[in-house]
Length: 97
Ligand SMILES: [Ca+2]
Ligand SMILES: [Ca+2]
Image (cartoon, rainbow, N blue to C red; front, side, top):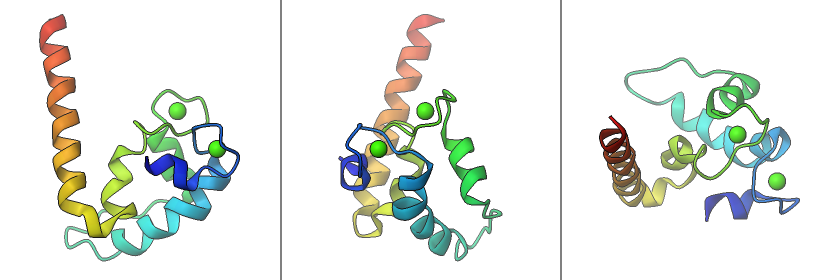
């Protein structure tokens, strides 16, 4: 879904260049207007923060925190989808405990 629109080299993931071009600017312009003003990190800081498995690429799963910034028109959908995924993760954690 989201990654594919931004995935210039079509490897299914975003590298730092693709992230910078397609995701970071949108993130930055929205994040700067957030009322509870979290600090807006640099491209590299944000990229490394999102790259949970440290393979230097962002998968669709790793881009989930960016969805509200990437698709503002679909914010309610994104929120719903994210809370669904969070629920799924909690259920898996619960099962493994
Ligand atoms: Ca790519
Ligand atoms: Ca990664």
